[in-house]
Image (cartoon, rainbow, N blue to C red; front, side, top):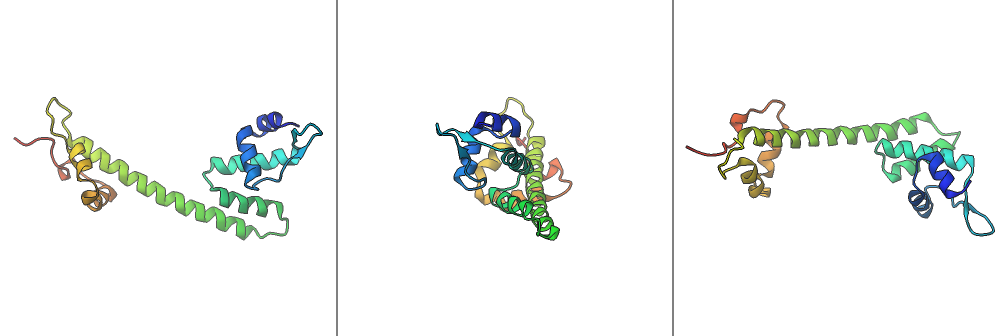
Length: 156
């Protein structure tokens, strides 16, 4: 099949197909006499594998490793599990980081009255920049923060 057909069958764009070839994630496609790429059913299966791995957020380096393990019938499933568990640990860390950011922003938004006055703790926090990064991370990492912990929008 040609690149368009392989793209449609695998869910991987033609541009990504060419990129995956250029970084040796997939083998170079065969060529017709006219120079057009030709893909096999095996190539499409590999592309589907890669697409699913990308959907799960795996890096190209990990995908290369997993493709190699997938194609190696002598491999140990423990090797595959280790790669998956490493990725899960990274995802857990990202989830904690994103949750802390969300919590911090929510606390700041809760402390802001959102009225016609110009004072705003959200902008004050952003203005503080790196000086407040440690405090913000600490505040955002608590499980249950209260709006009382944040600086009020305006003083009376």
